[in-house]
Image (cartoon, rainbow, N blue to C red; front, side):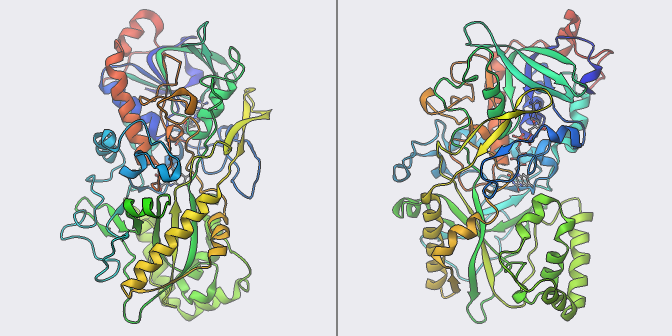
Length: 569
Ligand SMILES: Cc1cc2nc3c(=O)[nH]c(=O)nc-3n(C[C@H](O)[C@H](O)[C@H](O)COP(=O)(O)OP(=O)(O)OC[C@H]3O[C@@H](n4cnc5c(N)ncnc54)[C@H](O)[C@@H]3O)c2cc1C
């Protein structure tokens, strides 16, 4: 059932498991746990679709606004969470991400790559991604078209691909299953405001919550899972300080530290060798999933060059610079304000490029190409059930740039703490002090050098970049938006993290975390696929620990949540 918190009839609802947050992580957990027989109560702070009052609860303070967007952007408070606006790019983390990397001073995750494989498979079903296959050789029948004819390099690979979800809006896609499932109740406009501990502080006694109208209530469960997103999880743990002044799970001052987002930027200029135009488009797998190659660096080379995990995609020249002479790119640049803040910000102009006139000239020079592009975008991005992921038209000027996506090293000084200001429920807002390290930028420079060498060695073309410009290019829009990782990271020992290998908060018997907060390192991958996998793994871990009651049994005890008889599944 899905209902508004104001419709609650019981003043102290109870469940086997209470999940805070109905984004991809919370929804995946709820469905998996209910399938296993547990009665799950999901608290979602927003409504069915985004609204201003709910979104305001995401507001907070940013220490350096040049480095991080305001926290009410790049997130959505509603059923489905940020999957209501995500791009759908999916890639699993790599084996090297989980292993110890002494050249970076990283001890590795307390779990291995292999531990997540069955859950990535399951996550593929939820995100409508087809087969769990990330090899360009096998993802598409007959193998994918090469990015460069005859490309072969020992250091740089173009064989590992990314796949694209339609993108699945978890709120829309799973509302029906959530509503029909007798073992799940989703309470909308129910904001968790505090985690209350049992005397002694070693287990959660209940969650304090508020409805949209400001009514207060408590929720009790056998276990509690925070799936509120990487920023809110840290905020909630830190703000729950009634019993322990430093907050819950924060005995070693780890909550909110190591905040990672990835670094992303458009860098360099790639000029293909004469007659050797590269292929930078998408192909579809047998299941219809869009797949695309990109550059990555082999793990042995990451070790040899003491670098982090960095990938890059070949893309069109910077939209803002009319020197690309492409009407379609100029048209997109001129209309960027029609897109949401999150998608338009990365199209903004670095430096001056002569205003709109040269762009209008590009459009005028190629009216038919531009019109065709507009129709194609409408057809393939707006009307199609599975959205064409991004712009891949060949630029008229014949040159490309690299769209770099880089791992961010965990840095204890990059942190989320609490601001003085409070939201309307009296919960302190988050204060975000995102910081990167010189080593993050060094790794991008090294990786660009390796990409360039591989392209030159194969006589595919020339990649030019100014090493002194790389930092500016990677930080032009600040931290990569929407990826909120590491604020309650997984660690074998409580002194270096917040949750254990099973995502249980160190030292708190029945409190778990699902989501990007638990990432020990960020890797190169966009996080949602692994967020889903970790949530599903946590659901599996919780199954045998819980004597399941089912909603009907809870209701029979007189502790049911909503009035009326549950609808049949
Ligand atoms: C513009 C954009 C593009 C993106 N593109 C990609 C991409 O291409 N690939 C990729 O992998 N990832 C992408 N992401 C990131 C992706 O959206 C997130 O990784 C994913 O949504 C995280 O899921 P989650 O369930 O952990 O958190 P969220 O989606 O943030 O969901 C958390 C939920 O918890 C609720 N909540 C918060 N606080 C409380 C509280 N106190 N009480 C009750 N409920 C609460 C929120 O309302 C929300 O519904 C993108 C993000 C953005 C913004």
